[in-house]
Length: 454
Image (cartoon, rainbow, N blue to C red; front, side):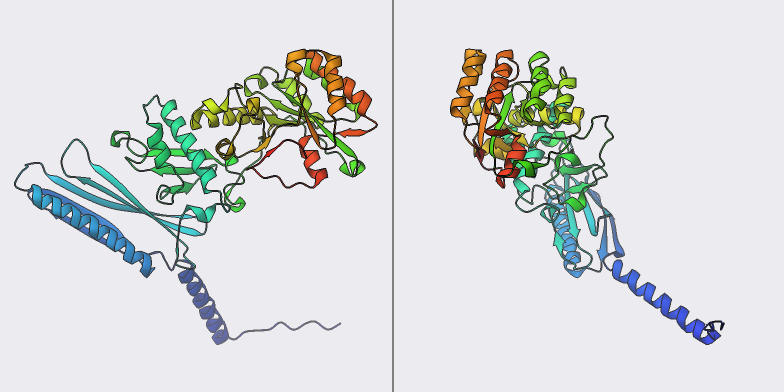
């Protein structure tokens, strides 16, 4: 058996190979860092009526470097002009300080310029300028580069909500209209942002969402609330361990071509009625959808978990069952977000289906909610009659393929009426959740629409 011969390199060949490797590495590094700082500019000046200290970088990206230089120059000239005008009228010493920081964010580079100027009065004026750019192309980018298409408005709604929450949590006065304007969906309003391990951090300049005395306002939006808004590659959501079991997914192929009914229950969960319903669903091979109130889920958490683990769908009916037409934008989002948070804290998922109390919704509320709006076309008025037989007859009379039936699982008569109707309709219909109905009907949902049936 012949042994393979090893290729031996001469010392000269080894030297040449080593040099080639070093050159390749240096080229790669220089390409990767082509927009790193080339040098720094430092300027210190002290006159009788002002002091000035400026530090800023010179980078190899010529376009952005030109922007930075112009911005710094404009700020300096603006300050010196003021200093000259005030020299004869005030003994107060003016000051200009310009600093910078540079960081990396994913595959992009971020350069922040911070300008502090004191030209009299009670405080410094602060202004920040951030540059985000792609080192591969040299092109400047903004926050929309990290968002899914047409999701800027939804992000702005979250920013508006979290900004007001910041003020309320810190017991500060605020002007809602001011915040609404300062968080509207323009790239100028979102010129300072950063992705952390678990959130999107937004920084608003003084005067942007409140008076200068409030200073910079920095808010964090948790990543789990950014799903579907921020591109998936920029989210690092780790699923928390939970004792709640993942619900089984039914084989919907056995329901293909059959007539479908979606029984939906509002205002729960409850103890007796909801659990009686759950006790009997398997008898009719049924699964239903619960539009729960956030104010009730902690009290009846075991019932909620049971309903979810069985494979029933959990949707939101807001937190306090208020008429959304009568609420401010912030209070609308508070009703919805608090409910979704409460549900997620118990079963580990955030619902994406919303039923507005009284069915009162419109385009603006749908946009604020960022959820799918599910209404109904069979209203049993069970809350009015509280009569199981009457509820049963109404359901049977109005049953149609694709119908959504409205009931309330806080009433025993409603549950009894629903079960009686299932008993009589089970040979004609299959009883499914909203999501199962959507899948079986091949519907692509639109958050701008309201769905009464399928």
